[in-house]
Amino acid sequence: MTSYLIIFTFLSLVLFPSCHPEQKRSVLKNEILVASGFPIGKIDPFTTGKGLGANLIELIYRPLFRIGRDNEIVPEYAKNVKWKKNRTVLEVTLQNDQMEDVKKTIRESIQNQSSGFGHLRQNLKSIQQTAPDKLEISFNKFDQGILYIFSNLPIVEYSHAEKETGPFRIQEQNDTLVILKRKTPDTYKINKITFKTYPSARRAIRDFVAGSVDFIISADETDFEVLNNLPEIEIAYLNTNLLYKVLKGPKYPNPNDSKSWQKLQYSLLEKKPFEELNHQYISALFPVPKNSPRYDEIEKSVLDIKPDSTPIMDMPQTPLTLNFLDAQGKDQRIALKFKRFLEGKGYKIQLSGLNPSEFEKKVFIDRDFSLALIPYTVKDPVFSNYLVFHTPKGPGSLNISGYSNPKLDAHLEEARYNPDPAEAKEAFSLAMQELMKKPPALFLFWVRTPLVYRKSCRGFDLDADKFFSSLKDVTCEL
Image (cartoon, rainbow, N blue to C red; front, top):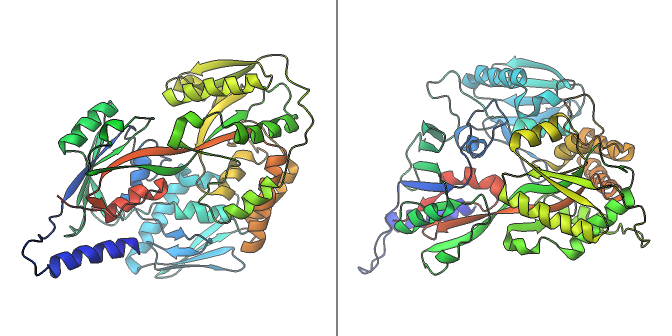
């Protein structure tokens, strides 16, 4: 609705200019430049994607459908999507010329195990074309993960010269730059978007002040105080689903000590040791973003669980090693603050700063750690928590800590596989309660990313999951 109001406002300015000669017609920009502190990364629909490129896919490719706030299916590339046979068959209605493109996209995704398809192999039964414009995707049982995966599957039009299904195509790309151009020019919106990685925030600010940069997305806690006095700019924060947590690993000396870990989680909320990060974080009680459906209900049920008042007597006598990414300035500061916090509770902590390859090998491959500081994105709360905290099955599991809780498993399975939406939501509330009774990790905070933009630019969304896709609706005045 907001984008429609914005478009109507500018249409009225252009088509029905004021009768007063002193009021001028708005002049709109045709292109914008977004300066980023993040690396560009690949823009490939068949990889999980890293860096900025993983976010830009939404501007270039469209999914079959999207998921609404109450888990309803909202068709996107498809004309219609509906469940059949107790939600074990997904019927997709397409334009006739889209059928082969959609089937090939799904086959490629399954073959590459991209978009999470590797976790659905056991449930995927068949993919059959039942009519010139209808495709039936059958599963052995209903799976909430199916909705998440298909709503994030970028459809590629192999039958067209320009394979992109979204409004933009890639005009140019290298390690530090990507230029997107709108396929069909729009008089009232931006038609060209340049994303450029800057080596320093200071240089990005310099170009912003000079007028060549329209947005700055910072990768660190950059101080933008120098810009506060400029009347034409605004400073805001993108709310993300990126959660920082400290995970207990297989090397933890007493992995069954859930009570002390539970007390530490509540103590984090009371003491707020990361308060100096100012506006750049939102305290996390459990791994569900605050913008998720029924968050308030889940939070209330979790807050009703209070740790007992007995002191923590079973402190590990041997030092615990906290592994973190040494190359990340933010992670260094978080690790140091966390060390002081835990030592104040009687723990002995050693810090181990590792480069990316060492961290990946030790934590994700060898899984040889006692504690690890890890940021991870919670895209879909049910599916994400299932993948990360359900008892691991096989070496490909994302549960790298080996955490196992049969009660949590049962609640997560019902939340993921129950076709009744109300019962599934209730099961997930119970899963979060169980997670707080026996925490597998300490949940620190949700990250907020600094954003600087010109007040003359409108139409974008401050939710980080929607910001990049909303750039297609941006209008900027000169």
